[in-house]
Image (cartoon, rainbow, N blue to C red; front, top):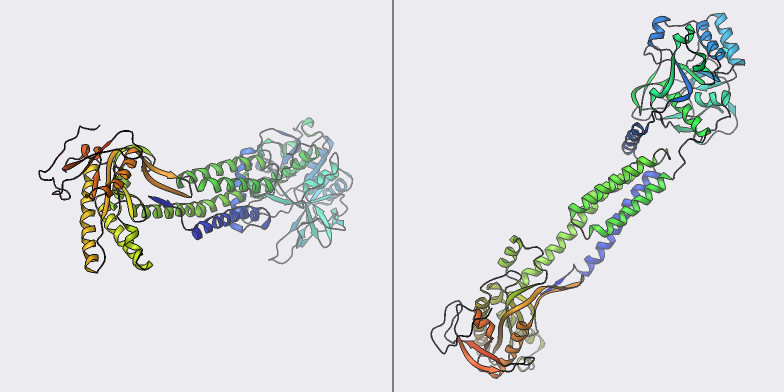
Length: 627
């Protein structure tokens, strides 16, 4: 019984389709890294990175920065709005206590009291003070232009630097300030603030952000931003920044040691004064703390404390390639459930790798390989499942050509593990062919010879399948069949004998029709023997055969050959006679068969037997029982 893989055309298309699916999966990752993502995918990527940031945020205190907060308690003691003199006093106290630099997250676009403005102007022009100015990036509304911009560098603009449409600056009385930094931000599409513009271009001049301006003014060395639009790493939890309420600074109750040598950011977290924005670390993060996180990242970079850069995009691409290679081999060999588990494991592995890589590369897509895995799950797993089902259906269809449908159905219902695996079983083998085949067909045209062969094999095949036999193979003008495998059957000997009698009847009827048509009569020779054999699926991945091999099978072949020397159409061996319960036999004598060392007793069916009924008394022989 021979099994074949799908047709050559189908087999050649499957690798091409697998290759195409694999290529698309890899290209999805590459596209996510370098080709640009749609908004939905980009937000999913940012959401995943936000989760990583929350889990990785350090609890180590940030001792290089002091955040002076005009908080609710400060406003309770010193109600807002503050005079310019009070604002100047706050900055003066911080400078007197030894602050390396003070940056204000407050835009003073209207003049205040004259003395206070003069004090603030003096601090901004000659002291370590950075004023704030806010750039507007909106293109929808009328440009905002208020106050007078300070600083800005002419010349080539940094690549990727956003261009502002308007600004809100300090009043003209502070125009001689030495340093100013931008506090304008550009939230993402979901409203979350993840990046700040390190440089902003407006009317041909480039302006730094507040943190960068503070470092350029008062840091140990001027800072260089690695990107025009920097992702704020939020490497520390927001509660790790040393803070002092503004009211305590004004009261003089803040120890000078807390201020000395620090870079100070002054702003407000109060809802009535300060700004709140969603960030990866909170839904309402004070803008002051966003600038503090950016300043902390720049300080880490200056000190060599920032994570070493990794090629995150290439890591993602390599991971996807390795997963696709593993899937190429596993999908064709494992079950759909196993492949789904494999993809699930790959997703967890990528999440762990992306978690480790995200601090080292701020720009690669953390979700890109997940989209590739999702594509494999949605397309590759069903595709390979379909291939497996197609192959199974083809094998099952082939099996039904060689085994009765009832046997196939029973085989599918059985609890046998791998029912086609080779195993030792008790079988009865029937071998039949046409006597004088050559003389029958030599004078016939090719078409008639082919029709004769087909009709004769039909006479042999129908009884075999009707009586639950397994068709092993055709031998040109005959066949080999057996009973007892792939499903065991205690009646295998009697069923084979029933089939022999049915074959004799069908061939006799076919022969009579041919004789009436002027053709010579037909005779079939049948050999039957029972015994132990190894029955199973033998072969390679390209072609296999379900067959039975063993001494009893060889004996059946010798018995069929011996039938040419007897007037009987069916020659039966000792093993079948011993196992039959419903038939009677005639002993024909003994003969030394080819390949045997001892003579073999030969039998035939009692001529009065009919299929499925016990024979009537005749010349009988009862052999010794066989195991």
